[in-house]
Image (tube, rainbow, N blue to C red; front, top):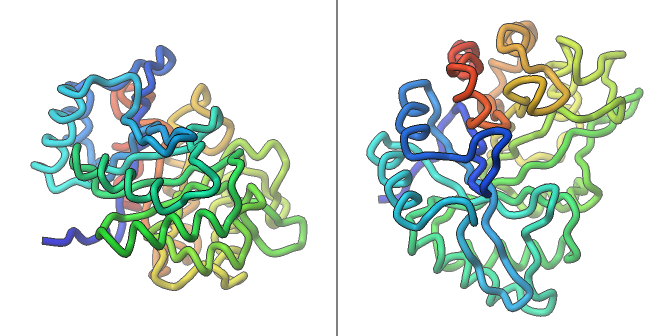
Length: 283
């Protein structure tokens, strides 16, 4: 049976690369998160190497990963494998997107991942390569494909995405299942209505500008991404402010609004799940 992407969700990135700040994922952490509204889990990060080999995150054992995915599936959750990140792990052979896609499908099937996430911050391949890679995955599987661009633009201009790979045309053609939009770590790089990413109101202002720009396909969900706390990133990390911001305008009523993403679930575990518990009204 093909899974359906949720109308609204609490999406949690899971640090599974051996992190100490925050603490790396454990099976108990995943079990506990399922009691606190998380329904989509994005494991950071898988690796695609130059020889097109695709491997699981380095900081979690095969046994633990299988147990965690099983627990998530038992709770009807969705598990994605993310590639990219600040220390880019998406490094495929630039001449063979087909093999990279086939090996991606193979790994996802091996462990039970429901899809992939492309957190492409500094990759060496271009948009056409990514589109061919995605097309091959869709041709031979029903995997979800999400992406995590950073919001950009403003200052009187329409919203855009960064990095430049996420051009308007690329986003239209890619037709992602969902965009896990990073609304944080702007440091003044995007301002809407005079509001920065640390200001309440930035979410609504940037979301409205993004919808008005009309380059995100109508069936692509737009998920608002924020840090779990100030250690996790610079943005709106107070769940009360996030909730009020989303409720204050027409974001919540927009059919493309897809819930909230947090970097990272592991930080939220350390603070007693206060982020998750604080955004329940908007997921």
